[in-house]
Length: 192
Image (tube, rainbow, N blue to C red):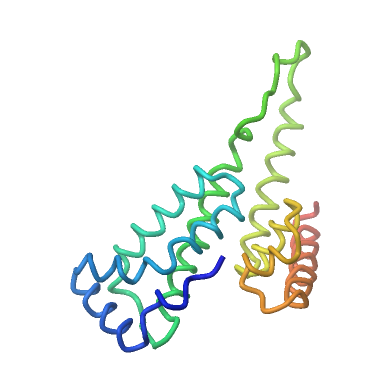
């Protein structure tokens, strides 16, 4: 899903809209966002695999972009789009971190087991492993993290290419190779 070419403002018009939005013009900001909203939502959905969570992340992205508009270093064509997607990447990362400690939504866990839960040592070990993996994921680039998480979720390579802004499948495989190597090295350093 890509932004409609006709709806993307020309370079001069985009620069004008950015300037107006920086001065507090909400309509200009809305015009800047309109061509990219569907792509932002699609990327959030592909990363989170949860429509409601993706919509919430999109809202947080739009709010953060409005609040941070004065910090935008506008350097020309596609600068605004790239800036928006960086904010989205960070909000997706925040959502994944926040939800990593919660049970999966929509999963029926059935009746609680009759035997005692795992011991304190096992729980601490599981938490240490989970935190280590999350920490190692933080060391990946946005593209590597996107490719790695999408691959783990079973997303098709062609879709990963679109969702993670890769030019071709070679970039997908290259990012996945680098991500795996970095994760292995990081986890080995943490003795996992």
